[in-house]
Image 1 (cartoon, rainbow, N blue to C red):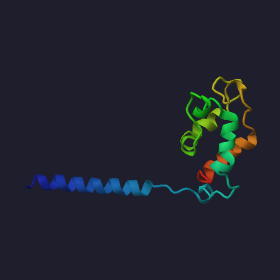
Image 2: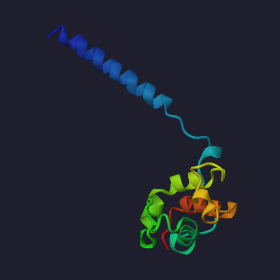
Image 3: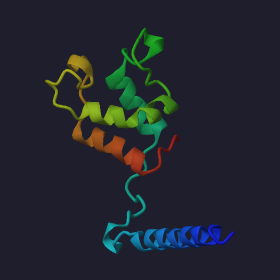
Image 4: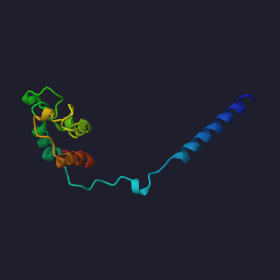
Length: 127
């Protein structure tokens, strides 16, 4: 019993030190780095994003138009792939991963790319 007690005391002390160090090392963001709520223009999937997807991603990403690529014809499918879509539409047009592929459809303008970003910042509103 006497040998167990020092072992338990060491464990308790070490646990306390770990908790103390962890608590002290918690950093809070400086006031200037705290993300502010989005207050830009309201962007919705139905009004803004769906027409954009249909114009620039059809027919390849629209199964109803014989597209065989990852579908972008629903709110959920576009929301789930938003980051990848955003990445690929911003690649240089001579990059083989740029979308729309081989400029078969009009590339997204800077304003349309910003609209995709705003949709995410605004909480991916559907309508």
